[in-house]
Length: 116
Image: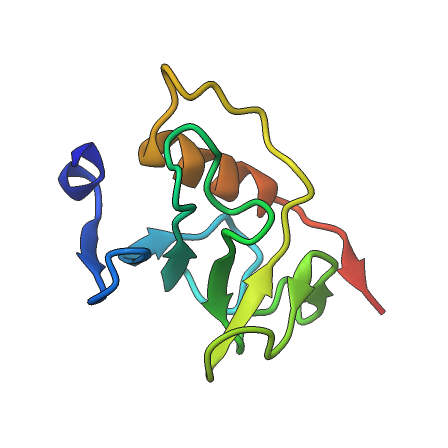
């Protein structure tokens, strides 16, 4: 898996949940590095990760400029995790991979709209 050349990764026993350590966040967050949990779609790579029932989770304590990002849904998911919502992403199953997904995630997290 090419992703392991970039990040420390692990799969849970179901091999559907991928944990990525040391994900660097864009400036503005209350921390610079987080662990990310990605529920892989059953038909990956045909379907993009992080969309629909394949969710991406970030730590619940995450804030951007001391505010909650709009696409961040607190306490939706496993304890301590919150769902980072994607409506859709541009995905080409023949050329995109998990590195592409994490690049898209970082771009989506750059200067996100916030609540309140």
